[in-house]
Length: 95
Image 1 (cartoon, rainbow, N blue to C red):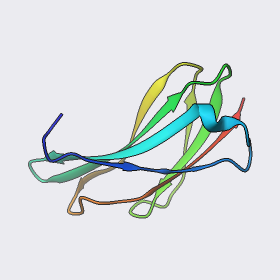
Image 2: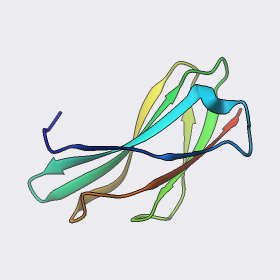
Image 3: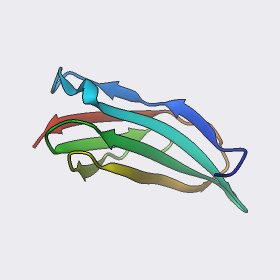
């Protein structure tokens, strides 16, 4: 991992599935030659598969991601951003 990577905690909303505390989400800004790639990580520690909707303050268009039970996924939300910091909104529901 690049030393200037920024780790933060994404907002994990529990409204659709209050017991989804077994799903974790966090952000990372990976430095590249021309800017920062914005990546949202989702780790599903639940006993069920989940459908997660991911958006950020830099790219508000929602992306739907299937995350199988026990799976870790990385969602690239923006490539070569001039901004190192961003916030993510992740909402997951059982499928």
